[in-house]
Length: 420
View 1: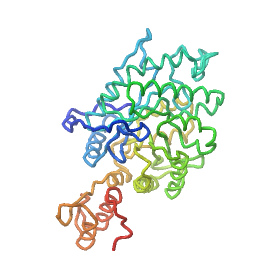
View 2: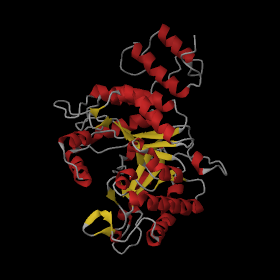
View 3: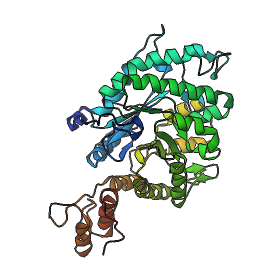
């Protein structure tokens, strides 16, 4: 839900990325994304006295090779009281991303999980989660109004090197309770895609789905079909609690399989650690660490996955958790704990074990150990024979080899297992 907050001015020196875009490549191949797999993590605000810890961690992540980031705006929030379009929040969000040298993925929420973010006049005055009586997503008025917004937004996104535009967030949650709107919403996405690509032919368009689509995949075929590339959110928890990391590869295989031959983006992916004591969701910092450890090689093993963004860097403050609890209309202890522990850093600024795991996964141990001008398997062999502290923990041990191996698994084309 949160857009990227401005970091201290010192971050500006990190520069702005530049890209070269291939001509006439179909948008579904994500031609505006200039890397095979872009990785990000959502910047977050924690309790104010400890915010410096988040800023320092984010700089470290940028130094380790973070590439992309998801930005988020609501359609309704982009409208002034008189109905005119206000792009101030959008521009600020995109500039906060690009000033860090990151490439933006953008969501404009029309549906937002179990809420609506369409203009207020299109919602039921008695229940803002429902469309106004007689209103449908495929109504000419709704489509035309959103098209006017896109005419303004798309050039701004392209100016900031955006590569994907989602026109709805976790739309299956709202639509599952209103199946009569699935066809109408699919038409809405198709109309939006045509309008967007009349302006930016190579900009990929879709609507974000949750992993719940695996329960009834045929229901969501229309939304999958209309999307240029498939965007998901996934959290490694179910009604029983936080899941073992060993279960993730199969879930990922299933989500990849559902996408067919289309490229895949994970707008959000995460796992709560649970409270340090008295957890109600069966979480632990070790389960979170194991999931992060599994995440990098599993994502890298699927070439179709072109972007994924971890949510989130730091645990949200009590005020933010209270806001989201009210927004979603869920206030159970389990949901509060889930929302409150999604970060890799506690809200007092203390890193959880998963944070170091994320750093290593990003390639923080890219070390030319044998000084031959290349980072490859020869460096790993050298490091095993002659241990050295390359992960910066002050100890030369097997963790350094493990850290370099993770880098190689992500960036080295050869199969590590097959090498002597």
